[in-house]
Image (cartoon, rainbow, N blue to C red; front, top):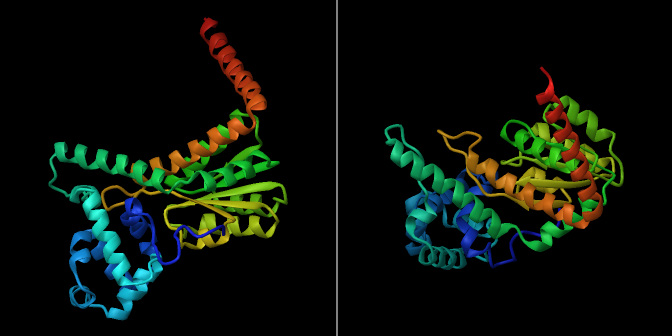
Length: 301
């Protein structure tokens, strides 16, 4: 995997701290997850608590709290508290904890909560998507012989979107949303090819297996995931972090997909810029082909 997403001892940027905690939550130990959930539920309370107070509130040991802070990239709990305090001061409470949907929420509240989750997913993804990381992926894909994209479920929709975008600008690209076909594709890749794995959790076996095979076959590997500590992030040469959460009422939520689609769109535009002449020719050719087809269909009796 490429360079770490956090600087040693300093932790993630304040503006993405809560999103980072949410992303790494599935890869934490049960005890550390308890601490992390308190951070997500009430970051202000954690910022005000001493390590002894947080230990009592979470029912975990002080050592677990320190380990959790270090997993998040901080030197220790005092640095985590300072970051949470800064995050609480920089953003209103409702921004830090957007709130889940409840069975009795009126539709007016559903609109507010869903739209806020989508907009926050975009903001958090933008904050974590650096030009340096994006640039390396763009250059890798722009020079590829072939780009295969793996994803299942909601991430499979994003994989299909990425492959069709690259196809429109003349690149050889395929999306595989079936595990057997993905595995078949992955072992046939070679140096000069690129494999992209898309998984919110970063632990989807149907994506992780093909990406690992592609790496072993010599292809460059890219992961798009919420969790920078996930298995898929460890397999990939390059990792792009998305930020959207799925909930009980919104599995495969638009917030997860829209953050992944944002990353894909940025990659696509970057590749189209790097290959401008050939991309423009391909786009014009595909527009003409589709336009001719539609016009011929309208002229038939």
